[in-house]
Image (cartoon, rainbow, N blue to C red):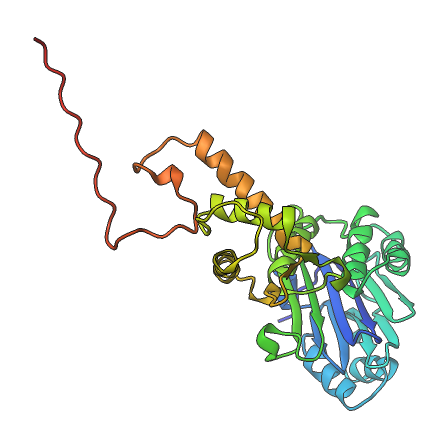
Length: 334
C-alpha cells in the first residue's frame, strides 16, 4: 500500500547555546504531530514529510546519536530508501548544522532552504515564498528557539502555506531533563490535530502550556510580594475563595497558604517560590481569573443559594450536599 502524500511545511532548528532542538510543522493533514516531528536532546531534530517515511525519525536519531552530521544522516537515510524521490526530510544535528532533501517526485511546489542552525522544507505549497519567508522570519525574530519556531511557522502560512488549506500543527522542543519532573527531555510537546486555524490555536495552547508548565520568564522581572502587589493578590485570592483574611497588604502566613493552595490546584507548582517574589505571568493570570469571577457573580442567576458568593477555591464548611433552601411560607389573607 503506497504511503499517503500530504502537503506540509516545517522547520527543524537548534539553539546550541541553550541546548534545545525543535520542530514546528503545519499541514492539511490530520494530526501531523504524530507523523512529522522527531527530536532528542543532545542528538538533533528531524522532520519527515511528503510521502513520509516515519522510519526516518528513529533511524535518523540513532545516526545523530552516533555523532553523524545532518548531511551524512540525510544522505544515509535517502540512499537506502527506494522511494526517496517521493520523500522530504529536514535534519539538524547536535552541533546545529542542518541539511534537507526534497525528492524529485514530491508534489509541486516542493523545496527547502537551509540556514544557520535550521532547515525549512515544504511540499504542495503555494510556492518558494513559503520556505523563504520561514527562513527570513527565523533569522529576524528575537527570543529563544520556541519564539523563533512559532514565528517561522506563522510566516510560512502568511505566504500561502499548504495550498490545500490548514488542518493541524505541532511544536516539539527538547532539552536535557526538560520534561515534566525532569524525567525525560520532551520540554515542549503541543499539538493541534484538527482545526480551521491550527497555527493560531497552537499558539493559544502553547501560551497556556508555557504559563503552567514552563519557566521561560526572565528572573529579572520577578516582583516582590509587598505593598500594593500583596494587597492585589489578597483581593484576587479572596474573590476566588482562597483567602478569607483582611486586605492588609502584609504577606503573612495565611496569605502565603492561600497562594500556595491556588498554585497547587491550578497546576502552577513550577511557578512556586520561597522568596516572597512572584512571576508577572501569575499576577496577570490571577487578575484575569478574579475579574472573571466578579463578572460571574454579577451576571449569573443563582441556582444554589449562596453559590455566587463562593469562589472556585472555596471549601464547604461541612461535608455532604448543601442544605436545601428553606421553603417560603405561603402568604395568607386576613
